[in-house]
Image 1 (cartoon, rainbow, N blue to C red):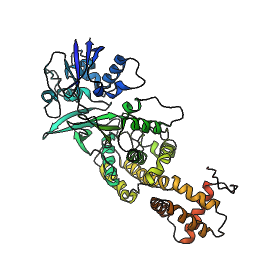
Image 2 (cartoon, one colour):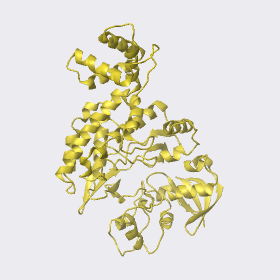
Image 3 (cartoon, rainbow, N blue to C red):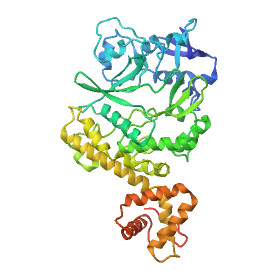
Image 4 (cartoon, rainbow, N blue to C red):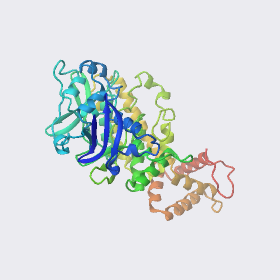
Length: 473
C-alpha cells in the first residue's frame, strides 16, 4: 500500500509499505522537508535510510514490560503500531497517511487533538482484555524505561519510570532540573509522581505544534567526519553547515550540559539524548534544546555497598559521553568555555541538602545510601569547580607566564605581572583568574603566593626553556 509522508500539511514523499515494512520510496515531492537523517552523506540507499529513521520512531525492543504488552495486542508488531497511529509523534510534525487520503494535520496531530491512553496504560498493566485504540504518541516514544503520555488539564505530560532496586532515575531528573535552575541552564522541569509502589517523574513537552526536535545523532550524520577532527569539532562543523545558531552560543550551551553531566556523573549523554530545536514551518534552526533525560546518573546502577569504594565514584574511571570516554577528561576539555561564562557555583551550595530531602521521598533508598549520595554530590560540585577554574587554558597561560618570567625576582611580583598581562588582553580573563584565586582559598597573601607557585610547579617542569614553552604533566 502506498502512503504519503507529510510534514504537517506538506507532502514530502511517496512510499510503499508491505507487511508493515517500508518497501520502496516511489517519489520525493519536497526535498527541503525530507527528514534530516535521509540527507546524510553516508546514505547510499534512501530506502534503507528511511527504514532506519522509521525504526527510530518505533517503541524500542528494550522497553520495560514490552513482552507483557505484546501479549495483550494479539500478535501485532511494533511496526504495525506506528502505522496504525500514522507515525504521529509529540517530538516532531512528521506523519503518514494513505496515498488517496484527504486528512489534514489539524485533524490528526497530538498537539491539539486528544489521543488514546490505551497503549500507555497497557504498558503500565492497565486496561487488559479490552479493545485497544492505538491512536497514541506512545507508539513513537523512544527509550527503554517505562513511560506514557497523558493529557492533564489540556497539557501534554510524559510520565517516565525508574529501574532496579532503587528506582532512582526519576529523582535524578528532578535533581538535574534544580541544578539547571540554579546555574541558569535551559532545561525541562521534572516532578515526582508515585503510582502504586513505584516512582515516576513527569515533565511537559519540549516541543509545540510549530517546533520539533532533531537529535544530535541526525545532525552528525549529515556529513562525514574528517580524520583529524575531534567528535566535538565534527558536531560544530555539521552545525555550521546547517546554520544551527551562533557557534559561540552552541559551544556555551553544550559546555554547560557537560558540566551538569559531570556534577551528576551522567553516563548516558549519547547523541540521541541531546537535540536541536527547529521551526517546522520555516525549517529555521533555533539552537540546542533545553536539557532533558539526565536520569542515568548519580550512580543509579551502583549498589550502596559499592558506593563506599572510591574506584566506583572516581571521575577518572566513570564513563562519559558523547565526546570523551571519561568524565574528568571531558570536563577538563570544556573547562575554558565554562570558565568564561562565569557561572555561579556558589548557588549550588545547598544542592546536597536539597538532594537529601528529595531522596527521603523514595522509600526504596536507605538512609545510608542517601547520605553517601549527598556527600558524593557535594564532592563532585567542588571537584567540578576546581577542574573548571584550575584546568582551563587561561589559567594555564597565567601559570606559564609566571614560570617563564625571568625579569622579576620576587614570586609575588611574577604573579602580579602575569595578572596584568592576562587581564589587559580580555576583561573576561580577570573574572576567570579571580575565580581561580578564590578556589585556592588562601588565608593571606603569603599563602596565596605559595598555592599559586605550587600550581606552577605542578603544571610545568622546572627545566623549562627560556622561551617559556610549557611542558604539561
